[in-house]
Structure formats: structure tokens, C-alpha cells
Picture 1 (cartoon, one colour):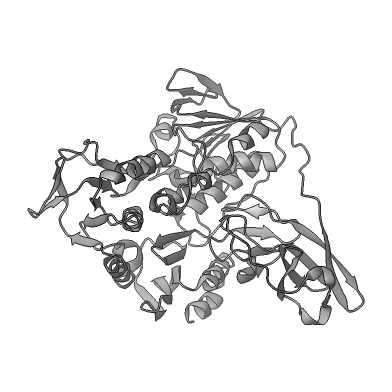
Picture 2 (cartoon, rainbow, N blue to C red; picture 1 turned 135 degrees about the vertical axis):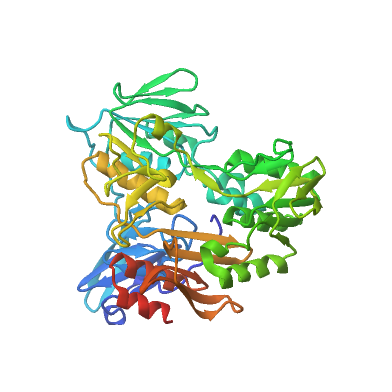
Length: 514
């Protein structure tokens, strides 16, 4: 992200033999200093910018699905005809003109960026209110504008910062490898230019469904014709003695991460309570800053989510980097210098980071009379039981057409994709949300990609080598592969996601067989 781009392949402006690019094949080249990816689909040649706008990954390493290319790093998707992006990328890549001259083809010039015609009409809402300034809320607002909606958009957020990359709160930003300027989803000017009104640090306290208005903590009232509820999840908080001491921290917001970083000059040893993804990512980030780290958790790291073998691998990885685990006991009391555990152990710590899980923020939904089922119940279009109100992100429980169950997940990319879908449905698209869940977790130099969703499994099949950090793991619920995790096999992760989306169990079995 922000580093120099390596130029590879032929100069496409000088021409390439058509015979060198078979149907369905891709070619990475460049025009001047700009990397370009060419894809042949039958008799058509399509060319777009070759670098993902999310994290600067090479799109040539991804896969082609219909008229799109999928990025191998975080599964962003780009339209091969227009360059338009799907979350977690928002910025499009350039689309290029391709000319065939004799037996060669030439990439000549960029096409104009796609501009949607203004989208308005008597059937559309005059104003859309979004409650929540996280991944889903931002994606909703940006998608409304990119689809050509010209009505009022108001985003209400309890967070004091404009939408930012929450994934880096526990990862690169906390580790010190992602600078502050990487964190915002968009610069402040974007919201002004797009006429998106941000009400930051102003929590919503009530939704008056009958009057179609939102009441804020400061007493202000915001009217809506359509509402997107994207309140996210809140960290589970300690209630033990000492839980409110100043050196006890959570890792949910940018402000949380900043507060931890501000304490590091006086921190020699940190204690992380909980071996969740957030807790372990925080442990890795603190080790990157040379802080001594201990982790206390009631059960082995990530065993419930990833199973014992992969969980043991992650634990070993952290131990190789100096993390000390205390598995079994829970914290019973915190003092300014020590934390007492239930087995009688006393651990000294200058900083206590709490990562014991999150719970969906449902208070507004419950007060509003929305249907609740361990989340806000929505249909396949992400609509709640109240007309004109949608729920997206960590709070939404939707009917998953692939597994046949109602699903709720707390994944960054899923939240963004749901925000985009809800925005299009507000504009009358009637688009079903049927995306395969995807998330990634970073532990030092090891990234784990996970597609699908396995709340339970009967068997876990691992192919490859954890020791060599090159493997694929299938989580089976009966005969069905419910989820796939990969390390060092980014392309296989994309292929598994595509097979799941097509409900192609034979293709999925072939992929996990290696």
C-alpha cells in the first residue's frame, strides 16, 4: 500500500502477438509505467489496471470469474470492462482500449471513468440515514453515490473518527507498520464532495419508526425515508475488580489503538486477556514493538473457530515470537501492577488488553420493534420486518442460500458487501445477498484466509504442511464442506470461494484435495 510498483511483462503499447494469448488466458504487461492486465474472453480482449486499489496486490495472481477478476489478497473484485470495484476495494482501476491490428493486439489508451447518470425519481427516498460509521455504513454511503443517487445522505456515528480501516486497528496500525494516513477509508474531502453529511461522535438513542426519524443523544432529530442500520458490534467488557483502571484497554476503535500506542513508552510487559483473533493480532502487534506479551485465556487459541491442529500451529507461531500463554485460568482481579488469575497466578503487566469477544449492538433495533434472532433478522434483500429499514454488517442475520441456514458473521468484507447490496436495494435493484463469507487474519508474516462459515464441523481435513506454511484446511459438516482455510495458497482460497458461490461441490472437493 503506497510502495513502488514493479513493472513486469511486455510493453503492450508496442503490440503483442494475438496467438500468444489463448481464450481465458491473462497477460500482465505495461503501458509506460502503468501495469496493465489483459484478459482474452473468446474473440474479445479486455484490459484493466493490474494493481488492486485496496492493498496494491497483483491482479494477475488472482482468478477470472465471468467478466471479473478477483484479487488474491483480500478478495476484492474488479469489472474487466469498466474497472469498477467491489469491496474491500472501492476505488476502480483504469479500463483500457485494445485494438487488433493484423495478428497482434495493442493496448492504446484509457477509457473515460464510468459516471452514473443522476438517479432520482418519485419512487426513491428523498433522504437516507445510515446509523453506523464502520465498514457497512461507509460502503452503503459510497455505493448510493456511485450508483447515481442524488438525495440526502446522513451518516450517524458514535465514533469520533470518519470511517477508517478497522482491520488495521489490531494489525498493522497497532504494530506501527501502517501510518496514520492509511487508516481513513476516504479523505475528508470525499464526504464533502459527495454531499455525505457526517454526524460523528453523536450516538443515536432512538428510532421513531412511525414518524420516520432518528433521535440523537444530543437531542437532535434526523428524518429519514430509508434507513440502514449498521451499528456493528461492541466488545465484551470485564466486570471484575479493577476493570476500569487506566491501563486496561480494548481494541475496537481507532481511538482505542491510539490510546494503547500512547501508553507504550511506559509499557514493558502487556497482558492480553483472551485468545480471540483480535487478542492474538494485538499480541503480535505488541511484539512487533518489542513489548513483552503474555496471553491468558480459558481455552486454547482459536480452537473453537479453526480446530485444534490449526489452533496449535497459531499458538506455536506466537510462542516462537516470545508470547507466553496461560491457558485455563481467567482473570479475577486487576490492580495497577498485577492481574490475578483464577488459578492463583499473579501476572505483572503495565498494560492489560482485553480481547474476550464482541456482541452485536442490538439496543436500537430492539427498541424499534425490529425482529430479533441473535441479531437483526433480515430477508435475502437485507430488509428488516419494517418497511424501508435495512440491517447490515455484524448485526444482520440473513438467510444464506448456500447452507440453508440463517447466518450472522462479524467479518469486515461481508459488512462492506452487505452495505453495497442494501444501497442498491434502496434504489430498487432487488438484489439478493448471496455472497460467500470471507475474512483474513494476520499473525506476524503468516496470513490465514478463510472462506465459508462453519459454526460446527464433524471433521477437519488438512492437506499440505503447516510447518512449511503451505496448506488448505476443509471444515466438513456431514458430507458438506462448510468452510475452507488456507495458508500460502491465496489462489486456492479464491477458487474455493468461487466453487462455493456456484454450489459446485465436485469442484470444491477437487480444490481441497490439493
